[in-house]
Image 1 (cartoon, rainbow, N blue to C red):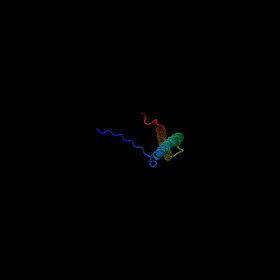
Image 2 (spheres, rainbow, N blue to C red; image 1 turned 135 degrees about the horizontal axis):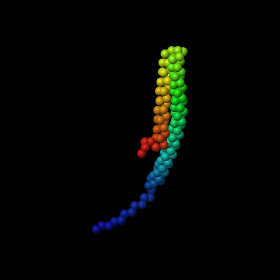
Image 3 (cartoon, helix red, strand yellow; image 1 turned 180 degrees about the horizontal axis):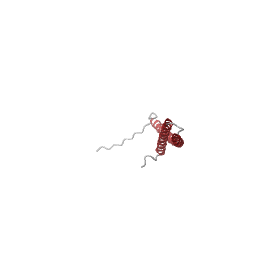
Image 4 (cartoon, helix red, strand yellow; image 1 turned 90 degrees about the vertical axis):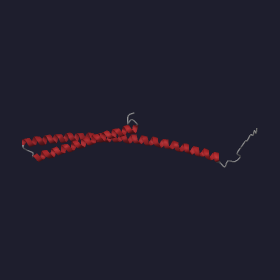
Length: 129
């Protein structure tokens, strides 16, 4: 049998341990900064999504009001046509205006719903789990 004991004690490692420690500290600081940047971005996304919901809600409401006003104009044009004070072209123009206003209202409603979904996604509530 051969029994041996070997002990190795480095006297000089060329700064390896200190360099490795500094590298680990730098990596930790970088990870902390990435985490903070992600938090800032998430808060910004939520704030932007909330503002978009508010803006599209106002646009939707305005489009609905415009559609209602166009319906009133159409009714007045039809009444005027029946009374003989308006032409069929006036009625057609009013119908086209009412349809355009209704289309705009539907598009605004869609934009509002999309903004709501974006807000849910920004807050982590969409898709539902």
